[in-house]
Length: 403
Image (cartoon, rainbow, N blue to C red; front, side, top):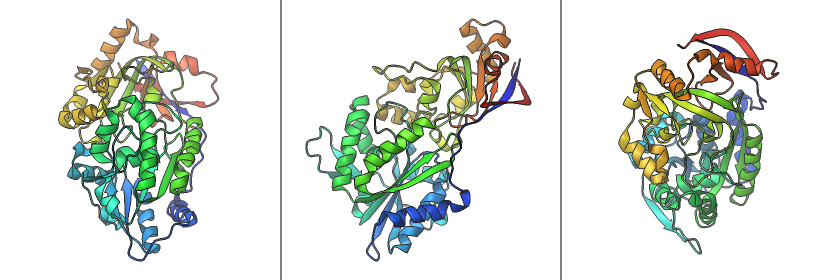
């Protein structure tokens, strides 16, 4: 059976690549922040594969220096990197965020300080190195969360809490399950913005091609409302699979640099959190994952979202890191190991057998690079038949032999 390569066309608002650094500088200057000469400024950077991340961090550090400050970088990634200082620095370096490139030292530590919790049920923590600086700037992409939906999901507010609060805060928030993320996370972020030293949030939004589309520099009083507005923009520009009923979805790569759950649950239509309702669409009978990204450093958290994985994927799993992240999240269903097949062909045979499909050509199959890259994909004849006449779909002449 052969698959045909197609291209999906989406709206493509994006920032001119040559103007990226100057725009970061312009946004920071326009925010009106001021720094005392020699003021130490922590720049909080997370563990996601954000477009142009290293360039944005470098431009932020350079602008801090221009304003008279002395920048340094702190990893803001909860329990990622194996919940160790060395592991978290390694994650940053994987994304090209190094002292050599940014001209700002990395100070990685898992130590936190406790901030006033006032009337909150949970305790409030902040990275000790960031708190001891004279100011902190946080950088993150605003996007839909993979565990829940609400007015604030994944962005600067979450970075304040789960990121800057390190493993300690991640454990605290996740111990409350989804309520911790839906309700306590935004409340805790407000506490950190009130009692911490955050002076600015650099909010990023990406288009359907994972290109930087929007950069905002938000003061503490603007972060929550600014993030909510950006989230609505993101919601309206999010890519999706071209059809919502599939027999098999084959995903080439899975990992923390793609999504916190390895695959974006908003794309695959699965959440797998006990007590949370599964999305109505898309409905995919079997998901096959072929490989774990190198940038994940063996962390396969979210692998339970798949039905089958290859031996190649399995042999890359660092179970200690995966289980630590899974247990921290409190969503154990996602940490369960799927069926392991020796290779892609055998995995597909298993999936079709599970669907009760004897003729592969009759199966609705899509093969994608990852859940971030949906502008190009491979589709089976049965899917192709549904896409004929769609204006945003471009058929190519490239074919892929699958079985």
